[in-house]
Length: 109
Image 1 (cartoon, rainbow, N blue to C red):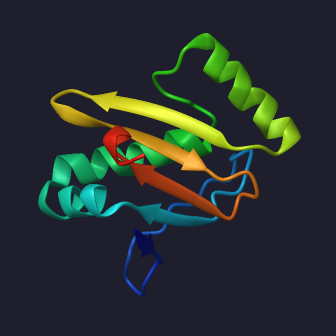
Image 2 (image 1 turned 45 degrees about the horizontal axis):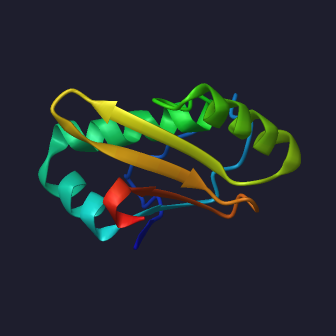
């Protein structure tokens, strides 16, 4: 995994309305490599991370959305899934202790 830390001159995502802390943002090697070589995918990942932080869980079944809403109250793991036009599906997972959010491809789980 690659841990993304803001650097001088880098981009920092701030969400004033986020319902939870994202913690450290991590990308798997597969996601990181595609972000580095594909600007549209990089934008997709950034947009999905923002949606996740805003409690937009993406393409989930109703019971998974309800599980995330319970997780916000109970302090358990949060899960989102996103699909883009001609882009690979990604998952975004925030750990129960809110220390880390990981972005990965489903086959990397």
